[in-house]
Length: 296
DNA sequence: TCTTCGACTGCTTATCTTTT
DNA sequence: AAAAGATAAGCAGTCGAAGA
Image 1: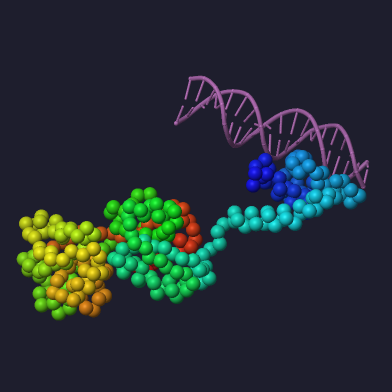
Image 2: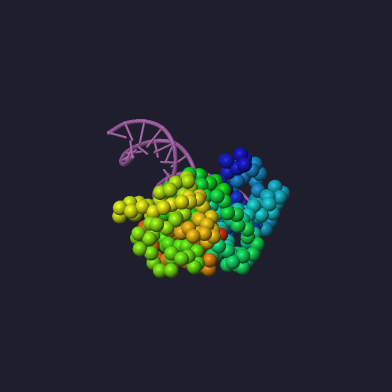
Protein backbone atom coordinates (compact mmCIF):
# COMPACT_ATOMS: atom_id res chain seq x y z
CA UNK A 1 0.00 0.00 0.00
CA UNK A 2 2.96 2.29 0.58
CA UNK A 3 3.30 3.00 -3.11
CA UNK A 4 -0.24 4.42 -3.00
CA UNK A 5 0.55 7.01 -0.36
CA UNK A 6 1.84 9.52 -2.90
CA UNK A 7 -0.99 8.77 -5.29
CA UNK A 8 -4.23 10.67 -5.44
CA UNK A 9 -6.69 7.89 -6.22
CA UNK A 10 -8.84 10.36 -8.14
CA UNK A 11 -6.08 10.45 -10.72
CA UNK A 12 -6.80 6.79 -11.40
CA UNK A 13 -10.43 7.59 -12.05
CA UNK A 14 -9.29 10.15 -14.60
CA UNK A 15 -6.88 7.65 -16.12
CA UNK A 16 -9.65 5.09 -16.43
CA UNK A 17 -11.83 7.54 -18.34
CA UNK A 18 -8.88 8.75 -20.41
CA UNK A 19 -8.11 5.20 -21.48
CA UNK A 20 -11.74 4.69 -22.43
CA UNK A 21 -12.11 7.96 -24.34
CA UNK A 22 -8.54 8.35 -25.64
CA UNK A 23 -9.32 12.04 -25.78
CA UNK A 24 -8.60 14.61 -23.04
CA UNK A 25 -11.47 16.92 -23.95
CA UNK A 26 -14.11 14.17 -24.03
CA UNK A 27 -12.72 12.65 -20.84
CA UNK A 28 -13.05 16.07 -19.20
CA UNK A 29 -16.67 16.31 -20.30
CA UNK A 30 -17.43 12.87 -18.87
CA UNK A 31 -15.73 13.74 -15.61
CA UNK A 32 -17.39 17.17 -15.44
CA UNK A 33 -13.97 18.86 -15.39
CA UNK A 34 -12.49 21.44 -17.66
CA UNK A 35 -10.11 20.21 -20.32
CA UNK A 36 -7.05 21.78 -18.60
CA UNK A 37 -7.92 20.01 -15.35
CA UNK A 38 -7.75 16.64 -17.07
CA UNK A 39 -4.66 17.70 -18.91
CA UNK A 40 -3.01 18.42 -15.56
CA UNK A 41 -4.19 15.06 -14.24
CA UNK A 42 -2.61 13.39 -17.21
CA UNK A 43 0.64 15.28 -16.67
CA UNK A 44 0.71 14.12 -13.05
CA UNK A 45 -0.03 10.54 -14.03
CA UNK A 46 2.76 10.67 -16.60
CA UNK A 47 5.15 11.93 -13.97
CA UNK A 48 3.95 9.43 -11.38
CA UNK A 49 4.10 6.38 -13.63
CA UNK A 50 7.12 7.48 -15.62
CA UNK A 51 5.36 6.84 -18.89
CA UNK A 52 3.66 9.13 -21.45
CA UNK A 53 0.54 6.89 -21.20
CA UNK A 54 -1.24 8.57 -24.12
CA UNK A 55 0.55 9.84 -27.21
CA UNK A 56 -0.89 11.89 -30.05
CA UNK A 57 -1.36 9.55 -32.99
CA UNK A 58 -2.98 9.52 -36.42
CA UNK A 59 -6.47 9.09 -34.94
CA UNK A 60 -6.45 10.94 -31.65
CA UNK A 61 -4.48 9.89 -28.59
CA UNK A 62 -3.08 6.35 -28.60
CA UNK A 63 -2.31 4.47 -25.36
CA UNK A 64 1.25 3.30 -24.77
CA UNK A 65 1.94 -0.37 -23.93
CA UNK A 66 2.10 0.58 -20.23
CA UNK A 67 -1.27 2.30 -20.44
CA UNK A 68 -2.72 -0.66 -22.29
CA UNK A 69 -1.42 -3.00 -19.58
CA UNK A 70 -3.04 -0.83 -16.92
CA UNK A 71 -6.45 -0.74 -18.53
CA UNK A 72 -7.98 -4.04 -17.33
CA UNK A 73 -6.56 -4.18 -13.79
CA UNK A 74 -7.47 -0.55 -13.28
CA UNK A 75 -11.03 -1.22 -14.40
CA UNK A 76 -11.30 -4.14 -11.98
CA UNK A 77 -9.75 -2.30 -9.08
CA UNK A 78 -12.01 0.71 -9.49
CA UNK A 79 -15.06 -1.52 -9.78
CA UNK A 80 -14.07 -3.30 -6.56
CA UNK A 81 -13.50 -0.01 -4.76
CA UNK A 82 -16.77 1.32 -5.99
CA UNK A 83 -18.55 -1.77 -4.67
CA UNK A 84 -16.72 -1.52 -1.34
CA UNK A 85 -17.90 2.02 -0.66
CA UNK A 86 -21.42 1.49 -2.03
CA UNK A 87 -24.26 1.44 0.51
CA UNK A 88 -24.49 -1.93 2.24
CA UNK A 89 -26.75 -4.49 0.63
CA UNK A 90 -30.06 -4.91 2.42
CA UNK A 91 -30.07 -7.94 4.73
CA UNK A 92 -31.59 -11.02 3.14
CA UNK A 93 -32.65 -13.37 5.97
CA UNK A 94 -33.49 -16.23 3.61
CA UNK A 95 -29.90 -16.53 2.37
CA UNK A 96 -28.05 -15.26 5.44
CA UNK A 97 -25.80 -17.80 7.15
CA UNK A 98 -24.40 -15.77 9.99
CA UNK A 99 -24.20 -16.54 13.69
CA UNK A 100 -25.80 -14.23 16.23
CA UNK A 101 -24.30 -13.98 19.68
CA UNK A 102 -26.62 -12.70 22.35
CA UNK A 103 -25.94 -12.12 26.05
CA UNK A 104 -28.97 -12.98 28.13
CA UNK A 105 -30.07 -14.23 31.53
CA UNK A 106 -32.34 -17.22 31.87
CA UNK A 107 -35.15 -14.71 32.34
CA UNK A 108 -34.52 -12.85 29.06
CA UNK A 109 -33.83 -16.13 27.29
CA UNK A 110 -37.36 -17.19 28.25
CA UNK A 111 -39.14 -13.90 27.72
CA UNK A 112 -37.30 -12.44 24.74
CA UNK A 113 -35.36 -15.11 22.88
CA UNK A 114 -37.87 -17.96 23.05
CA UNK A 115 -40.80 -15.92 21.70
CA UNK A 116 -38.83 -14.99 18.59
CA UNK A 117 -37.03 -18.29 18.06
CA UNK A 118 -39.66 -19.95 15.88
CA UNK A 119 -39.92 -16.88 13.74
CA UNK A 120 -36.14 -16.68 13.38
CA UNK A 121 -35.85 -20.35 12.37
CA UNK A 122 -38.61 -19.96 9.80
CA UNK A 123 -37.44 -16.72 8.23
CA UNK A 124 -33.66 -17.11 8.50
CA UNK A 125 -33.13 -20.90 8.49
CA UNK A 126 -29.38 -20.79 7.85
CA UNK A 127 -28.53 -18.47 10.71
CA UNK A 128 -27.37 -19.71 14.10
CA UNK A 129 -27.94 -18.33 17.55
CA UNK A 130 -25.45 -18.50 20.42
CA UNK A 131 -26.71 -17.44 23.81
CA UNK A 132 -23.91 -16.43 26.14
CA UNK A 133 -23.93 -15.76 29.84
CA UNK A 134 -24.76 -12.17 30.65
CA UNK A 135 -21.93 -10.37 32.43
CA UNK A 136 -22.89 -6.70 32.87
CA UNK A 137 -19.37 -5.61 33.78
CA UNK A 138 -17.97 -7.03 30.54
CA UNK A 139 -20.90 -6.25 28.30
CA UNK A 140 -19.71 -2.97 26.80
CA UNK A 141 -16.33 -4.42 25.97
CA UNK A 142 -17.83 -7.63 24.56
CA UNK A 143 -20.11 -5.57 22.33
CA UNK A 144 -17.28 -3.32 21.24
CA UNK A 145 -15.09 -6.29 20.31
CA UNK A 146 -17.90 -8.03 18.48
CA UNK A 147 -17.99 -10.93 20.96
CA UNK A 148 -21.70 -10.30 21.33
CA UNK A 149 -24.12 -8.77 18.87
CA UNK A 150 -26.84 -7.92 21.32
CA UNK A 151 -27.58 -8.05 25.03
CA UNK A 152 -30.59 -7.74 27.27
CA UNK A 153 -30.59 -5.99 30.60
CA UNK A 154 -32.93 -4.14 32.92
CA UNK A 155 -32.98 -0.52 31.82
CA UNK A 156 -32.04 0.50 35.35
CA UNK A 157 -28.38 -0.16 35.89
CA UNK A 158 -27.65 -1.23 32.34
CA UNK A 159 -24.06 -0.67 31.21
CA UNK A 160 -23.17 2.74 29.80
CA UNK A 161 -21.88 3.41 26.34
CA UNK A 162 -24.27 1.22 24.41
CA UNK A 163 -27.26 1.95 22.23
CA UNK A 164 -30.52 0.80 23.75
CA UNK A 165 -34.14 0.18 22.99
CA UNK A 166 -36.81 -0.53 25.59
CA UNK A 167 -38.56 -3.83 24.92
CA UNK A 168 -41.21 -4.07 27.61
CA UNK A 169 -42.14 -3.30 31.19
CA UNK A 170 -42.45 -6.23 33.57
CA UNK A 171 -44.48 -6.52 36.76
CA UNK A 172 -44.30 -8.97 39.63
CA UNK A 173 -47.07 -11.45 40.41
CA UNK A 174 -47.46 -13.99 43.16
CA UNK A 175 -47.12 -17.53 41.85
CA UNK A 176 -47.51 -21.01 43.29
CA UNK A 177 -48.28 -24.46 41.93
CA UNK A 178 -51.68 -25.08 40.41
CA UNK A 179 -54.11 -26.28 43.09
CA UNK A 180 -51.95 -24.62 45.75
CA UNK A 181 -54.25 -24.73 48.83
CA UNK A 182 -53.31 -21.21 50.00
CA UNK A 183 -53.72 -19.56 46.60
CA UNK A 184 -57.37 -20.40 45.85
CA UNK A 185 -58.06 -16.73 46.37
CA UNK A 186 -55.92 -13.63 46.73
CA UNK A 187 -54.12 -13.88 50.07
CA UNK A 188 -54.24 -11.13 52.65
CA UNK A 189 -51.01 -9.40 53.59
CA UNK A 190 -50.80 -11.54 56.72
CA UNK A 191 -51.36 -14.76 54.78
CA UNK A 192 -48.83 -13.63 52.16
CA UNK A 193 -46.18 -13.19 54.86
CA UNK A 194 -46.91 -16.63 56.31
CA UNK A 195 -46.32 -18.43 53.01
CA UNK A 196 -42.91 -19.99 52.35
CA UNK A 197 -41.16 -17.99 49.63
CA UNK A 198 -38.44 -18.68 47.11
CA UNK A 199 -36.54 -15.72 45.69
CA UNK A 200 -33.91 -15.06 43.07
CA UNK A 201 -30.58 -13.58 44.05
CA UNK A 202 -27.27 -13.93 42.22
CA UNK A 203 -25.43 -13.67 45.52
CA UNK A 204 -27.54 -16.00 47.65
CA UNK A 205 -29.24 -13.13 49.45
CA UNK A 206 -32.62 -13.26 51.20
CA UNK A 207 -33.66 -9.63 50.69
CA UNK A 208 -35.28 -8.32 47.52
CA UNK A 209 -37.62 -5.54 46.43
CA UNK A 210 -40.56 -7.39 47.91
CA UNK A 211 -38.91 -7.40 51.34
CA UNK A 212 -38.24 -3.66 51.15
CA UNK A 213 -41.91 -3.00 50.40
CA UNK A 214 -42.96 -5.28 53.25
CA UNK A 215 -40.50 -3.63 55.64
CA UNK A 216 -42.04 -0.28 54.74
CA UNK A 217 -45.40 -1.67 55.82
CA UNK A 218 -43.93 -3.10 59.02
CA UNK A 219 -44.08 -6.70 57.81
CA UNK A 220 -41.70 -9.46 56.76
CA UNK A 221 -42.15 -12.63 54.75
CA UNK A 222 -40.46 -16.04 55.12
CA UNK A 223 -37.92 -16.60 52.37
CA UNK A 224 -36.82 -20.21 52.73
CA UNK A 225 -35.03 -20.69 49.43
CA UNK A 226 -32.73 -18.34 47.54
CA UNK A 227 -31.64 -19.39 44.03
CA UNK A 228 -29.49 -17.67 41.41
CA UNK A 229 -31.76 -18.26 38.41
CA UNK A 230 -35.40 -17.60 37.62
CA UNK A 231 -35.99 -20.95 35.98
CA UNK A 232 -35.01 -22.98 39.04
CA UNK A 233 -37.26 -20.74 41.13
CA UNK A 234 -40.12 -21.50 38.78
CA UNK A 235 -39.37 -25.22 38.89
CA UNK A 236 -39.19 -25.17 42.70
CA UNK A 237 -42.55 -23.45 42.90
CA UNK A 238 -44.15 -25.92 40.49
CA UNK A 239 -42.85 -28.88 42.48
CA UNK A 240 -43.69 -27.77 46.03
CA UNK A 241 -45.89 -25.54 48.15
CA UNK A 242 -43.33 -22.74 47.95
CA UNK A 243 -44.49 -19.49 46.35
CA UNK A 244 -42.58 -16.70 44.63
CA UNK A 245 -42.91 -13.14 43.53
CA UNK A 246 -42.07 -13.70 39.89
CA UNK A 247 -41.94 -11.62 36.72
CA UNK A 248 -45.31 -12.16 35.07
CA UNK A 249 -43.97 -12.95 31.62
CA UNK A 250 -41.93 -15.82 33.01
CA UNK A 251 -44.89 -17.64 34.51
CA UNK A 252 -48.03 -16.55 32.73
CA UNK A 253 -48.22 -19.40 30.22
CA UNK A 254 -47.15 -22.22 32.50
CA UNK A 255 -50.08 -24.63 33.09
CA UNK A 256 -48.35 -26.01 36.19
CA UNK A 257 -48.59 -22.65 37.93
CA UNK A 258 -51.26 -20.57 39.60
CA UNK A 259 -50.91 -16.80 39.30
CA UNK A 260 -52.42 -14.52 41.91
CA UNK A 261 -52.26 -10.76 42.34
CA UNK A 262 -50.09 -10.11 45.39
CA UNK A 263 -51.50 -8.12 48.32
CA UNK A 264 -48.63 -5.65 47.94
CA UNK A 265 -47.44 -3.58 45.04
CA UNK A 266 -43.82 -4.41 44.19
CA UNK A 267 -42.21 -2.12 41.58
CA UNK A 268 -41.52 -3.95 38.33
CA UNK A 269 -38.69 -3.32 35.91
CA UNK A 270 -38.05 -2.48 32.30
CA UNK A 271 -36.07 -4.68 29.91
CA UNK A 272 -33.93 -3.08 27.21
CA UNK A 273 -31.87 -4.55 24.45
CA UNK A 274 -28.39 -3.13 24.09
CA UNK A 275 -25.97 -3.00 21.20
CA UNK A 276 -22.82 -1.20 20.15
CA UNK A 277 -22.65 1.91 17.97
CA UNK A 278 -20.46 -0.08 15.59
CA UNK A 279 -23.38 -2.27 14.51
CA UNK A 280 -26.07 0.37 14.89
CA UNK A 281 -26.54 0.91 11.16
CA UNK A 282 -25.69 -2.60 10.02
CA UNK A 283 -28.68 -3.92 8.05
CA UNK A 284 -28.38 -7.44 9.51
CA UNK A 285 -28.34 -6.12 13.07
CA UNK A 286 -31.14 -3.70 12.38
CA UNK A 287 -33.19 -6.60 11.04
CA UNK A 288 -32.57 -8.75 14.11
CA UNK A 289 -33.39 -5.94 16.53
CA UNK A 290 -36.61 -5.16 14.70
CA UNK A 291 -37.56 -8.86 14.71
CA UNK A 292 -37.00 -9.10 18.46
CA UNK A 293 -38.87 -5.88 19.20
CA UNK A 294 -41.85 -7.15 17.20
CA UNK A 295 -41.79 -10.59 18.82
CA UNK A 296 -42.11 -9.23 22.36
C1' DT B 1 -9.55 26.80 22.82
C1' DC B 2 -10.22 30.01 19.12
C1' DT B 3 -8.42 32.92 15.39
C1' DT B 4 -5.29 34.25 11.89
C1' DC B 5 -2.17 33.54 8.28
C1' DG B 6 0.51 31.40 4.83
C1' DA B 7 1.39 27.31 2.10
C1' DC B 8 -0.63 24.17 -0.71
C1' DT B 9 -3.95 22.03 -3.75
C1' DG B 10 -7.08 21.65 -7.40
C1' DC B 11 -9.97 23.75 -9.94
C1' DT B 12 -11.30 27.57 -13.48
C1' DT B 13 -10.71 30.73 -17.61
C1' DA B 14 -7.67 32.59 -20.95
C1' DT B 15 -4.25 31.73 -24.00
C1' DC B 16 -0.48 29.48 -26.29
C1' DT B 17 1.35 25.41 -28.85
C1' DT B 18 1.02 21.31 -31.41
C1' DT B 19 -1.16 18.17 -34.42
C1' DT B 20 -4.00 16.83 -38.15
C1' DA C 1 -7.42 26.64 -40.26
C1' DA C 2 -9.54 23.87 -36.89
C1' DA C 3 -9.19 20.84 -33.18
C1' DA C 4 -6.94 19.16 -29.32
C1' DG C 5 -3.60 19.40 -25.69
C1' DA C 6 -0.52 22.11 -22.62
C1' DT C 7 0.58 26.07 -19.91
C1' DA C 8 -0.23 30.35 -17.17
C1' DA C 9 -2.63 33.06 -13.99
C1' DG C 10 -5.97 33.54 -10.65
C1' DC C 11 -9.37 32.01 -7.28
C1' DA C 12 -11.45 29.23 -3.49
C1' DG C 13 -11.05 25.89 -0.12
C1' DT C 14 -8.25 23.22 3.26
C1' DC C 15 -4.81 22.43 6.62
C1' DG C 16 -1.30 23.13 9.96
C1' DA C 17 1.48 26.34 12.65
C1' DA C 18 1.67 30.30 15.40
C1' DG C 19 -0.28 33.69 18.28
C1' DA C 20 -4.05 35.67 21.31
